[in-house]
Amino acid sequence: MTDVLPEVLDALRDVYDPCCREKGISVVDMGLVRGATTDATGRARVELLLTSGWCPFAARVLDEVGDRVRAMPGVTDADVEIVWDEAWTTDRLSPDAYRRLRFLPHPNEIQEEIR
Image (cartoon, rainbow, N blue to C red; front, side, top):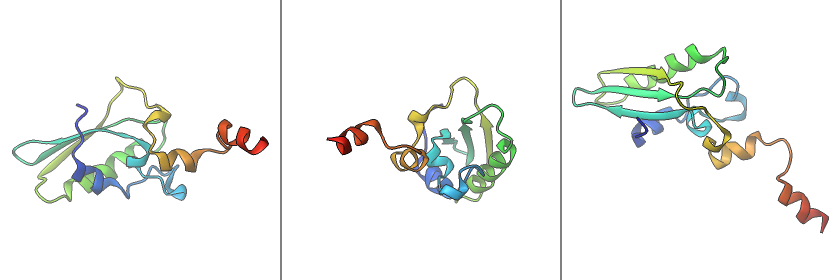
């Protein structure tokens, strides 16, 4: 599953992995939502990637995502699961999240300053 319903993304824009909360980077901006669908009965299925298999907050994030999706209009229940067949990479970060997580300027920016 790689389809992601826009309304699910909207519902998750203020759900944070505790490691990124202080930077204001949601699970959506982190690119952790791999898929989100609903069926005709209103049951939702959400697939999440983790930045690390050792994430101590995985259960907490799963619970919060599930609670948010279940609260959506028309959703009767939700299954939220971590998928392991795809690795999370920084390519999944939104441009804003990428900028917030960078500690050093991009090499092109340094070259421009030197000239």
